Length: 180
Ligand code: IMP
Ligand code: MG
Image 1 (spheres, rainbow, N blue to C red):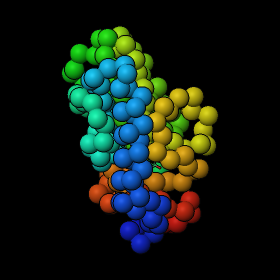
Image 2 (tube, rainbow, N blue to C red):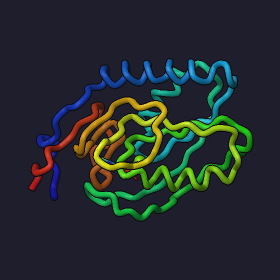
Image 3 (tube, rainbow, N blue to C red):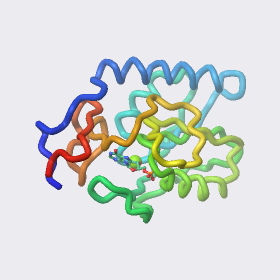
Image 4 (cartoon, rainbow, N blue to C red):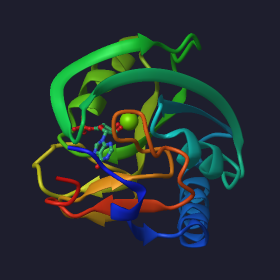
């Protein structure tokens, strides 16, 4: 399949995304503020880069940044095989950890990360996702979800099709049969 920019429809524009992410930041602040002054936010690269950077600006606590880079997609489909490209170095024992993911689809990526993260014995792990697709029974409890969506292929605002379109300033989608 080849996707052209003209095929991409806007789902949420930049200012709509910013507003929603700001609300999530407030929700997250409220959730933690009686529990801890500092959280460890883990950005799941590459797709979460813009969501993460906007979200942490609206969390009114000390936020320590961590990054993991994992891949599972090829084209518009999850391959089901997770590859770890790089992993966090921070000590997480007894810490409050917030995993920040772009989209939860099959849930395989987060399940994989969670399995390894638990070995560090954090005190608590929560999940924030810009979007949660409701097609698969992914079994992940998304604590802070920006949007709940049906089965659309999303692009932009960090999300790619074979590494292209991550820098679109909006969250877009393509109709299942467009592109050809
Ligand atoms: P999961 O492992 O199936 O939950 O998929 C999660 C990962 O696949 C996310 O981290 C995304 O980077 C990527 N992904 C899932 N859905 C989409 C999409 O609609 N567009 C682009 N990437 C996606
Ligand atoms: Mg991702």
